Image (cartoon, rainbow, N blue to C red):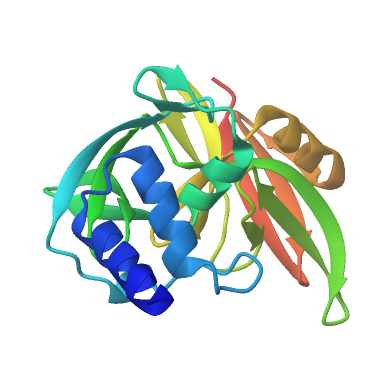
Length: 209
């Protein structure tokens, strides 16, 4: 009897639209709670046909807003961040919260991730620069995760790739820390910040205009 009740409960969750934030949260906890630590689910293997819209905005300053109200439960934000997904449609980025049964399209003003801390760590007998996002991702500065500069609303900002083609903004405090641990050189109208990670040099060059 208990198994039948649980089965009916799971079928109800599967059949309901997940664009309600409470239903989505319940679905993730019900079906993905067996993942150890904070492993990202295999989003690339999921191809749901049902697409809905959710009134959820990730602001350019890193805040998450749902139906006009700022989300304050960091644990819920972290949970939703594990199913963030990006697609390119007609050269335009579209963002979703993706499950095996449904995709909920959301709005991202700039990028969905934000680097809020860095560490210098020793790994494989080398020193690496480790980046941490506000939602629990860890990225290391290497050949596949290099820092790039690009404009957003007339401001040049530093970004680093995280996963599935999505980037994180390196916040101002973290960038100032990078300047402290890196080497700054000037050449005419260009300033270059060189960082060392895993025995390699990575340069970030900006114009002084």
